[in-house]
Image: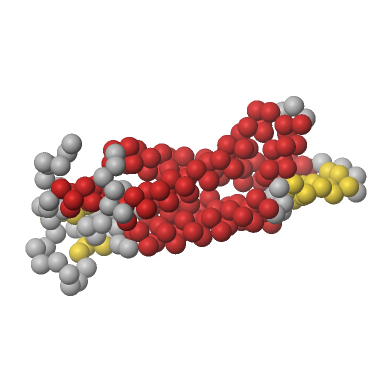
Length: 212
Ligand SMILES: [Zn+2]
């Protein structure tokens, strides 16, 4: 393992969150803010209050997840007949009409990925709080996955907006975004912020302190 190596923290080096310039932190730490000499951002050894911020955002996202799936995400009106669809009823509709690739994409992008991301972040938060020693490299990898796939959950919102724009052109049918769409967007955005506020170096910090 890497435990024999000196860390930036040990050498009082600080990496800038914005431009990633590594600079030497003043020996006396505490009063006053450290400023990045290159871009002027405030420097922190670790993202400040990373755990509590991430927890707050993850819990908020879990709460938004409920109305996002219970409330209709689209409302289609064709020839006077209105039909509202939730994400899941949309998936079932596409399955029943034989368009299973679309059903699969919606299921993965809108139901599976957001939930998987939230569970991974919860797992990482608990593992850091409990100072687990378990496979830090794999946990860092898990974190990287949540960061990388985050933006793809927006696919569903794009699909709804494109559908709304396309179908608005036709006179026979209208399609509107339902209230579920707002909550779904809220899930995606809060999860992206949650992933951003988590500092993956915390995974390694507990390895260092336990080693000593
Ligand atoms: Zn900077």
